[in-house]
Amino acid sequence: MWRLVVEGGVLKRVEEPALLIPPGFVGVKVKAFLVDDFTQWVLRRGFGSPSRWAFGVVVSGGEVGRHVVAYAENAAAQYIATDRFAYVSGQPSALETAAVAYVVEALHRIPRGVRVEVLGGDPRRAAVEELAEVGPSKWRIALQGATISGGRVVALSRLVEVVGNSVVRFVDVPSRRALAAAASLKVRLGLPVVGLGELPGGWAVVTVD
Image (cartoon, rainbow, N blue to C red; front, side, top):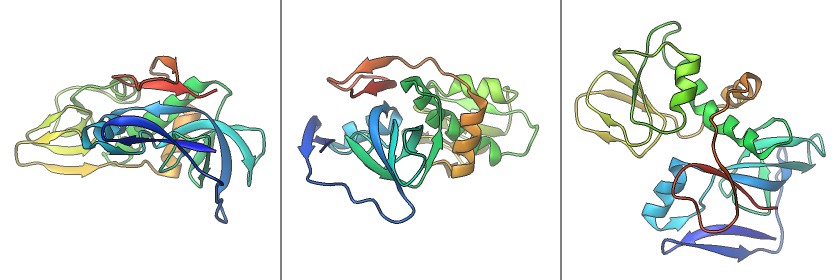
């Protein structure tokens, strides 16, 4: 078995003898993983797992043979163990569910029905525009690259800059409820699906089979 890690800013494959699946977790054979703002943060840092979201097939502990989008600390691997997942269709592009879940989580933290302003820009902007009324507002959702200078903000990325007096709450990992809701919405972002090689410079779904 193997997993991918960033060491010294370079992507490497590490061999491991076995996967431990704790009680309450399911085992998943990974078919693809998500490259997103977290990946860019890891590359800047120079070390760590390049992905926290995988698409794959359940092999133990759940409905064996069904496809899932799942969270794991080392999602860029041959197999993962997870207790945070949603059943999805059998296409790698279903990994976009994970990205949409951050938007669903952000909207749960903002009063229902209010207009929201989007700061910064990454593929999740399309999901915000589909799921909420977007326009000037004190309620804001900050995406990758945002400069935050005021208002009440839910940030979906750590790659933001806070330059003013703001109330900022970060969504590092969406809840199980948000992940399940995102899977039911079937909002698509149009991320490219690419084969495993060098990590893409932007957001993408990377297949490993």
